[in-house]
Length: 304
Image (tube, rainbow, N blue to C red; front, side, top):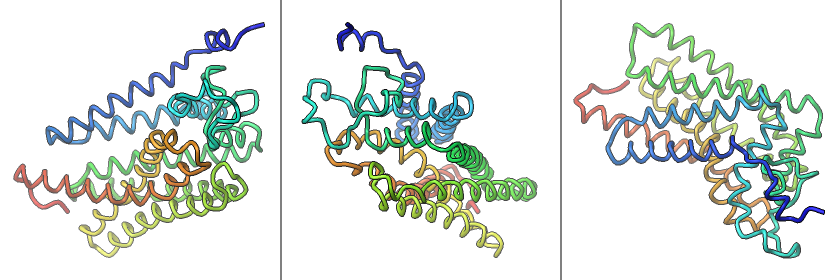
């Protein structure tokens, strides 16, 4: 009979998770470089886009359950620190096992997982196929919208020669984001019964996230149709920030606070659900201020 130690020794090495950790280190380095040397943050943003594309592509290449297991594996490392030696009755409230421990790529190395992570996996691994298809559409559309938004922001200041291209990409972004957020709200409508997510607080939190993102996008459209390029640019920076907040701030902050709040069921996931998009809007304004400051420092004209 194999011992627990032997089971851990035989556990697979999740190369994808380890590569993600390495990429996060590089990404953090690029952020520090941009802050310390007052350089452009383009490298940082495109590195984030590349990592997002890599993680999201896994849902289409490997399948939804396998991609979620890889995603859960990213969080398993920190949240399990110091758990191995605890008796079962002292395991924090927000840690639970999942069916056959199939929700992680770490094998038997980690058998306790964040409650939201276990529920996330089981909803799609054992749920109706339609739910997975909706998730895939959401991922595809939001990924396209995020990449196009980054391209559109790079095209500022306003260039009349690229007006048609800018307008076309804007329309595609609007369509993709509308579909993507529609799918997100569909999925969120099921969260009210999932205690591991926070129940109805999670459902309405995801609705508020969608409203924050879409509200910024709609304001951007209204202002450009009114001919106000300055206000349009302001709202599109906020829209980009809300998307980055909903995707990256959500995941990075959860990675940090989930282990700290593991004794409180659903606390960490609810915090990032409610806070990530509004915080992203503020970061979008900060990014716009930074770009304008750098433009003035280099003797450029006012950006519109």
